[in-house]
Image (cartoon, rainbow, N blue to C red):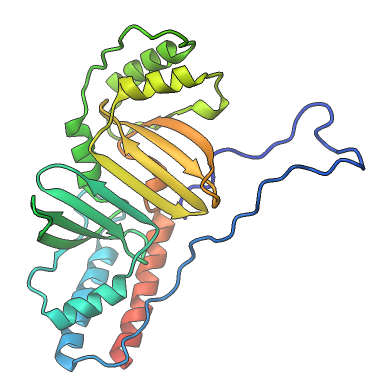
Length: 287
C-alpha cells in the first residue's frame, strides 16, 4: 500500500507519559472517514455486444499488467477513442474513481484520475476549449506525463532574491533546495524538508512561496485526510501539504523528487488491482 504517514507519533520528555488526573487532554477531533476499496457496481443490464467489447478491453489491460514488471517505463497504455458508447459506459463503471487525481496545465492540458484499481489511471488530454482530444488508460505507479511536464516547466537554476524584512531562516532553506535540486537525478531518493518542525515565521513561508513560485501540476491524494501536492517553478521540487479530515494543515513539507511517493501506487497496490480486476471481469462476464 502507499507509504505510511511520514511522521511517527512519539512522546518524549518529562511528563510525556502521564497527565494529572484532573487535567483532560486537548485532543483534535477524530477523523470521520477514510478511503477504502469498494468493488465497482455491476450494471443492471447491458447490451451484449457492448459488454463483450468492454470485457475484451479489460481482459487485454489485465493481461498487459500481468506481463510487464511494475514500474517499467514501457507500461501498458490503452487508447479508448475507438470504444462504442455502450462499452465506454461499462469501462467507466468498472474504473470508477480512486483516491488520487491530478491537473496538468499546458498544451494540451491533462486531467488524470486514478481508478478504484490502484495503479490504473484514466488520462484525458483537453484542448483549449476543454474538449477531450485523447482518452486513455495507463497502468503504472503514476502517469509519466506528471513528472515529465513538471520537470520541463521547472527551472534548473533558482534565483534567490534578497529577503524582505522579517525573514529569519528561509534563505538557508532556499539555498539547500537549490543545491539538492541541481544534483537530483531520476531514481535518486527523495529529499524531504519538513517545514512543520522548523523554526519558521510567516515571513519565511511567504518568502519561500514567492521564490519557489508555482508549477504546472497539482495532485490531490485523498485517503486518511487529504494531501495536496503542487509542483513549483524549480525542477523536481514539490510543495506537499497534509490535511486531516477537518481540513486542518498538519504537515507542511517541500520535497525534491520526480514525483512525491505519496501520490504513487505501490507494487502491493498494483498486485491487488490485478486480482480485483480479474474478479470484476468474471462477475461482469457472468452477469
